[in-house]
Length: 153
Image (cartoon, rainbow, N blue to C red; front, top):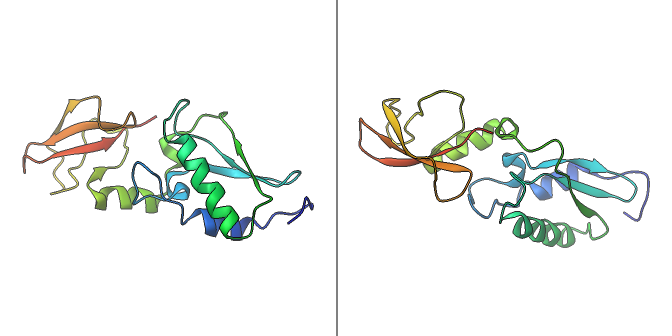
């Protein structure tokens, strides 16, 4: 690609689907929904961080650059797009399944979270703050296991 009026979106998406989120490595950045789209002139991939100031943003962009370069897309730029802001609605179904299999309850507007260990909904939030700003600490009252829940936003 060299500034032409096209961009090979499927090929680039296949490359980006292999780029893991640095904070939750079972998710790709496409699972997380932060790859927002493409622009043609100049060719670029548009990425929206999970929130403004996310400490992983620079690491994610560096991983994208490395993956694009390795796949022969060195002339495709990375554009950070902050509007509209990212929302947990953009996490793919595959991403939600991967979160749960990893032991993190996926985001849900429900007041309770399903325990990723035993499936019980007899759970409680024990801290609004988790290992990352995107997650909260929860506990299952059935199996007594702690777990993280991805916050809705």
